[in-house]
Image 1 (spheres, rainbow, N blue to C red):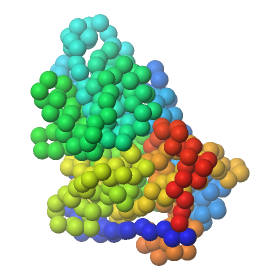
Image 2 (image 1 turned 180 degrees about the vertical axis):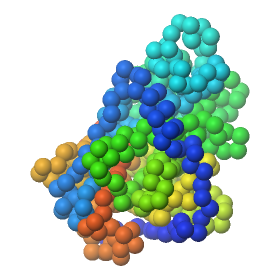
Image 3 (image 1 turned 30 degrees about the vertical axis):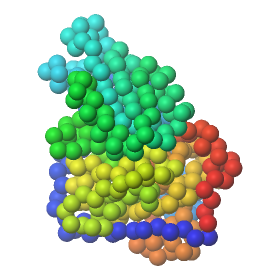
Length: 402
């Protein structure tokens, strides 16, 4: 078996301290309060895989299963919904804590707001979250998807009443296309990618993702447990920045060791960390990876400082690692709970499993400081959002380890 990872190790002791004030526990409480005002809200499971941890030689392994989030099979709605709520609050000159779901859909607020059209680019999960939120709040959504997007994901977005089309462009060019439409037509762009002059909404998206991190933290705290290692998948890096910022803020004196995982065909954060020259280094081209949610070539500007200051490792991994993670989580050892995890959701579990068991990754295991005392936390950010492909990987063995 040959599995090739590329690793950049980052000495955070030499880095400038990043501002984490927008990702601290006080903000997380406000975000969770907003999300829990929706009738569909329920805390997603934090699954303890005791038998897998024992098999791999870890002290413990926890996976936050976001396939249960708001019935949408992915975590992305957390960012989009909070951002739309915060945008409306700002437009009305109110605090978002005054605008729970029932207030947002009231006739009074609707009359004051009028009709708003939200627009976004997506690989699927984020766009569905925007479409769902617009549907809940009786507003409009327009969604464009990059070349090669699955029809199944298009159909799920359209089911929420949104306009949705697939472009002939990659993700980053689709983002630019949507932003042009927003500027020309007065739409509201809701994107987790940030650039100069567009940073407020991406910051709110990052804050929205903290509900996932905060729930995991509270559940672990109930059990008097703390993660020693956190593995986070990354596209532009908004999710990774949010979770990194939260846990670095909550444990300032004893931070977990954080590793960022990206597909080798879209490893913009790895590439930026490797250059270490104070500049962001995008990846261009089609970025043809099965990890569609991570096929993003341009790092989020407002998140890089958080990652650079608090993440020890940046990993670039092949598609086969994500496929391996899907099979591991979907076929649990006796006594463990099954987790249906999609291509982007399972990447980190695939890394942990392979690093702990493969002889050829023994040196990688040492570098990541994984051993029998490690308490590992991963986030399965999506379920089988592309069911046919999930079945091909898990049932039919697509993308085997070679």
